[in-house]
Image 1 (cartoon, rainbow, N blue to C red):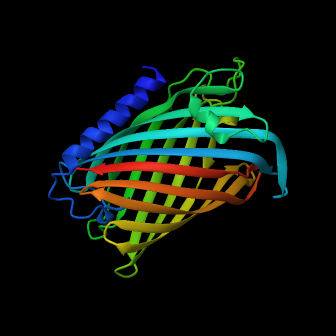
Image 2: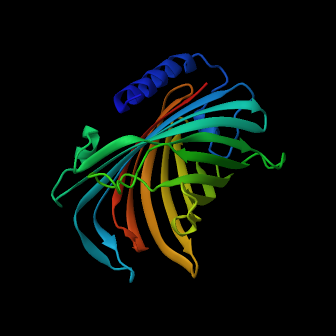
Image 3: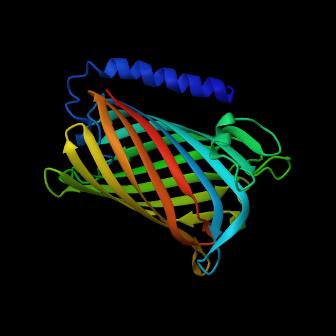
Length: 292
């Protein structure tokens, strides 16, 4: 399956699910289904999240910004499908498509969307896997745990033997998330997520594996039952033999709008405001969610 077929099938599935979801009586408002809340038995959820990360600077070991000598841009498209197998258990799968592009500082970040393979660009499906989400404590209905295993399905994603730019690490991912939210009032809600990202080298080389423990915080405001405005903050430390080997902090704003029952679109922007030994870029994000 080439990249254009993949994107076409995801789009087709999204619009088909959109039509079906319009008749779902149980989806009174999609705001009630936060990431912490599990779906009912028999419910399905489709998510399609797209992100462009672009940078011309990076944070050095002292935490100061320095020029990267050019522009690096990554596009990531994540397609998810989830199914409620029981009131407290959801099973799902996801696939990641990534594109990268390098060029001079004044290059347009939109070049990454040409999805070409050359000395300055590369595109491919890079990860695919399964996941399970469950509620471990029945009385805590707004708390859940999700674990997923994503396998690297691409040969030489780091382009070590190819005359193409870096696309991804040569690693599988085991991601575990602890999710919880709290209603502060009828208009405000706080969501928190603590995760562990264990990256496993495909050749099982310990020096090329790693662990990160990102923490996310979202404050949402609901001006209407169909509109969500949120502020997000993320602290992402990567761990080494002597503690934190690198980190970044990104913050941003987002907007969600419910198009119809069970159908929601999302747009957000984030900026990397601090860090050490990491990029100092920004992201532009667009997503679709269909709950049926």
